[in-house]
Image (tube, rainbow, N blue to C red; front, side, top):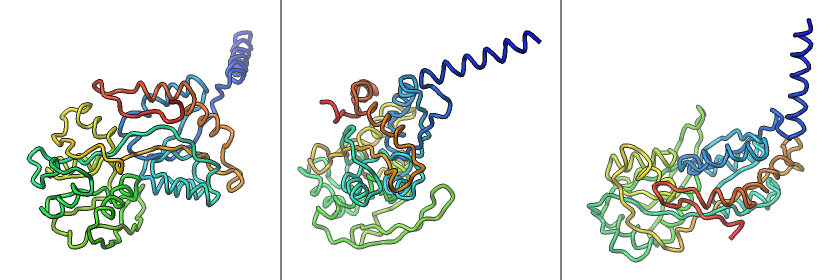
Length: 298
């Protein structure tokens, strides 16, 4: 009997200790984020440290930026962490998010086979690189998944000056069919393939086909230097201002959805944009290569 009383008392004391330190077991925040933050390995570093510092556990829902934003619009998550600034600002303007907080940036790179049939490496801009791919009829793989990378790719094709057409495709996400309409170069059926997949699968498929594709630099580095076997594709076009890739975090607006955990979302925002989170982002490297650069603290 005494042993039973002691056990109950011990459990009660432990529960109070955890509650007093803010490490209660119900501190779970739902976050929709892009597949590139997951595929790059960054979240594997950030989230355990977040939990150590704050007690917050993150339930990560990784998908394309468009789908992640829709999760926020539907009130299915507490916070979104994505990389399509124009769409993020619209999300806030329409009242779905409270404010966009700059977190970090890297950039996009145009990658392809070393043989470089289209002569991309000799071009001076991303627009010229894409025009060279189209002129050569060289194989190009698009994510085609309404992600931030897919949005950037469509914008780059438009900026190249090539005639554009539109296509509607049904893709499967979480067992559900979703129709997305997107832009692509006209008369490109023979060389442009849209696969409706995340960044990692797109890079792998492009590598198998020895094709060109657009990737965020972080995921490319992970697949080039951090996996065995490594992909063979090389960076052929980089450094253009048009390839900038900023990431932002946005709490879902509690005035829109009363059930969202806004206070906890702001605790996460303050951590990831504060000295601790920003240093972890700056220090994250793969094979000695920096993948992301902090934006909240310079």
